[in-house]
Length: 269
Length: 269
Image (tube, rainbow over the protein chains, first blue to last red):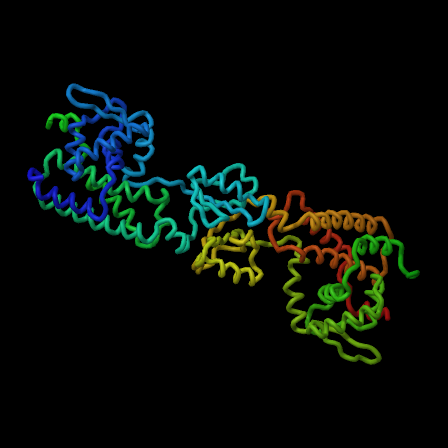
């Protein structure tokens, strides 16, 4: 670790404190950020160096890669004395789906949202609500209602339905969407991203590899929180939710630490 | 009954068939229609003759008046050899409140309606829903939601709220608002009012007293059904609900049988 700059060490410490990142999840972030298009791959050597900069041992990386191959996310081929790893079609599709939510400077949401309500008794649409929840597009509100994006579906059959461009969201639903623990983690991320920004502004530039590792730690810290709640407009979240601030800091950091050319990382080997 | 015209006998038979009207409720209709303003009263003699035309015995009228005095609806004072009955302030207020719903040619409703939803757990606004239902302004939708007229209230505290100019109402809620039995009674009323209209168009005019009794039977038959469901726009009701047709027939009959001068009824004594 003696080869690392103080700027990198300080910034990485901020982004990895609290809890250790799960290695397989970190690798999903890395491929999603650096090599999510068909034909792109990362050599085992570069991958080991990048996760090594994040404090992760080569053995843990091998275990994680094994798991990701087993789950059909990653393909590995021998290349000379090492390996080349790339996302499978499944991995590329999932990365592409997650990408706008992570990288968009501003989330686009439908103007209208709809609320579907069942009754409490038999034959009042409760089974229908359960089916809708399985699609993943709906937010449950107690046992009798769900909220979904867009205008009312055409065939509501047994459900009471209403669409509007704004709902009044009560405190308990704010807390269901973003519980106090997650809110605290968002506030911590806001502070950490601000601190990383300050360090990058005041310190000399980090190396290409450090810049890549730092970028990936930032993407991963942001993605971890994002995917712990439903993808909803800001007005669904508790007052003071720093999601939009974090997104803006994230975008600034992405511009400061642009995605590196894979070839430039490979040349450092 | 030998003094009654065939037109009246036929029409009254249509309007009283099925189930007998409760006398106290009929008397409430009579005062609400003929004497709902301050200073207006109906003599015991006229009241007995009117309800007599509807097939009700003087003894039943005395019992009903006793009950209505006890409930604070009716005041009775001696007047010469008989009594004069009139609505109390409470009775006038309640009659005035019910009046637009009964007599308006077209019901006016707010353009917007709102839906309030609680959660299923503790501290998710369920007690608040119960309080709202006690106001009588809300329609329950299962155990977790209510619908009310107008825009969203200012302070929703623990409730999820949404307002819209139209909701999609499922079949089970249509049936809760207007159950099949009530729907059947509406369809029967539509037929009966049409038949009464035909008889009045084809037959010689009935007497002043018969016209009054017929008018009151019509008001009562209409009011009985109206107040067995919530006061809601047509789109809340099952498909084929003849409420608007009945209202239009009712208005035509009210014009054919205008409210009689109380003095003209008293002169017939």
